[in-house]
Image (tube, rainbow, N blue to C red; front, top):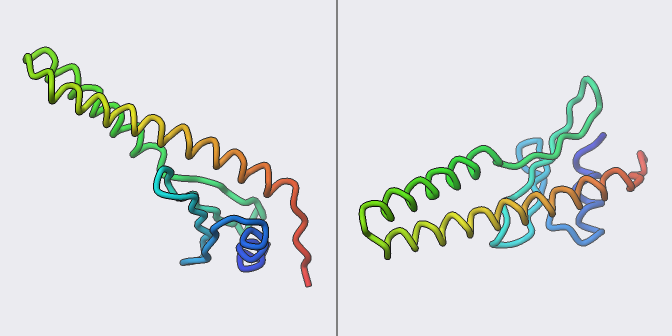
Length: 114
């Protein structure tokens, strides 16, 4: 599948898609991570992915810091780390929801080959 035609088709359907370095990046806004679409030339399968492991690591780190500062008696810092962890979790859930919508849209679309 031609990624240039894919990005053009996604832009025509209202997605903020940009072709860069042989990958299509789709952005929704400030509250979600960009989603990357890659094409495997051997199997012809499109891969929709985003940086999920880093986000999970940050959620775990800020959750640990929440409990560490809470046990040390620093409740203000604990509350701040808890808020950051919850915002990161909401960011991850919004990104997954948008990636799911993008996957469904890609499955349903037909891109002309010529």
